[in-house]
Every structure is written in C-alpha cells, then in structure tokens.
Length: 317
Picture 1 (cartoon, helix red, strand yellow):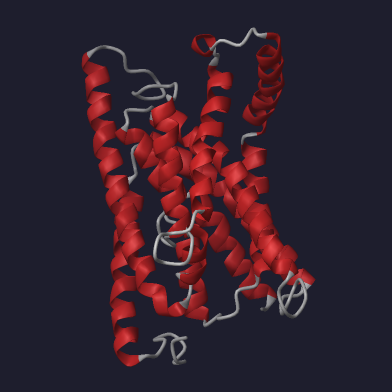
Picture 2 (cartoon, helix red, strand yellow):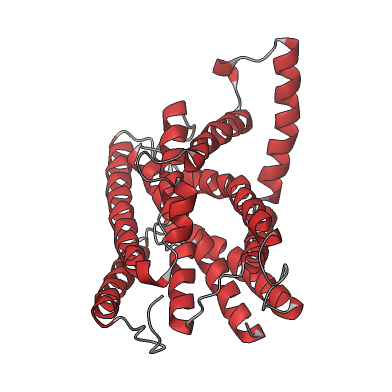
C-alpha cells in the first residue's frame, strides 16, 4: 500500500467513523474500487487509533468530567452513599455508558446452527463477494435516519406546543436503562453489518425513543471511545499472529500518514455532524446513504452475473 492509498483510507475512515454513513461500509467500497484484497489488520488498528484520538480531543472536557465523577461514584458505592434516583448528569451518563456497552458481548456468542459468532460474520462480510451486503446495509442506514428524523420533528412539535422547547432542541436529556439497552443492541447490529452506520443507527434509535438529538449524539460519540478501543485491541491481537509481520505490506510512513489523516478528518467530521444535526440538515445523509446503497447494489448485481470486479477487471474473490 502506497502513502497515497494510506491517506485515502485514513480520510475515508476519519470522515465516515463519525458521520452517519458507515466507516466499515465506505472502507469496503474504497478497497473494492482500489482492488485491495489483503486487509492489513495493524493498519486498521492505527486508523482506529487516529479516530479515537479525534473524539478524545473533541470531548476532552466531558471525558475529564466523567473520569472525575467515576471515581466519586466508586467512592459513594463503597461508602453506601450511592442513590440511583439522585444521580447527576455525569453520573447518569457513566451508568448508561456501562449498560450500553454490555450488548457488545453478544458479538462473541455463537449463532445457533451457523458455527460462527457476530464478530466472525463482520469479518466474513467485508469480502468482495459479499459487496452487495454493504449496499443493503447503507439503505437500512438511510431508513433508520429517516425514521429518527421524523420522530425528532414530532417531538419538537410536541415540545413547542407545550412551551418547553429549548435552544438545544426537544426531547429527554437523561437516558434511561431501556434507552441504553436499545442503543447498545443497535450498535451490535452496526458492528456486524458493514454499511450500517454505528453513529447514524444509534442516533436514530435514541431519537425514536424521544431523546434530545444533541444529547444523544454526545452519548453516541463518547460510547464510541470504548467501542473503538475494543475493536482496535481485537484487531491488534489478530495482527500479532498474521503472516508477513505486524505491518505486512504497509510501510511505517504509510501507517503514520493514514493515522494522521484519520485523526484530522475525524475531528472535522464531528464538528460537521453536530452542525448539520443542529441545523436540521439530516436529509443530506439520508439521501447520500440511499444513493450510494442503491449504486452498490446495482454494481454488485453486475459483478455477481459477470464474476468480475467492474473497477479493476479482476475476478471476484
């Protein structure tokens, strides 16, 4: 992989990790167009580290408040002073983050009669011959974003009639256990299907449950930190046992270039997403994921019938 290809992959990762368009789906599309068949796990880990750095920098104040509140929470638990009904905003988010992460363990539960688990399916479906799945998953992202946007507009109208509409929008600002479980399960599905946006589907799930969209987006991005870290650790474990060494066919320079591109573009994509959400421009992502999803499906059908990658002319493997 050249430095140019590494930067392109980093840009795609950084842009799509936080925008509701699916990073896994767009990396599959990019690799499909470039004809990349060897998936360098260590390079993927470094791209994840780049996006992890971006979200940590953007939310550093909130993260620091959560860290301090976590130690205060632990102290209250051991001294018997903890009361669920009296949790402040930071403490509530900490508990909901923990609950929201629990469904991820389902990815390692064997699927009956399939002989694989959810994580295995995610790895299998990134192959070129499963390219059509990316298309259908992108369409599903578009549908979820549409449903979430419709629900949010209804919530806004209800709050406006009741005179409760605030500057940051309508909806509940504190998550409940049910909210965290639904979001966690949605995140699980996004981890399995390349093309199903994690940020988009979890945001939509929160909106459909009547949560404030800006609070939900903050929760989604902070929830991404342990999720991205876990994905990086798992891929690093696999990379350590890969043939050809840790870095494989990717030079150190290319890895650094890709990671920096992912970090810079990732930060900018968070800023962009929050602005587009605040100004009610979600139609941009709804239309984009629908158009790209349909295009991928059409291309996949052609490739299935011919057995050849339409971009490279090489046989589908």
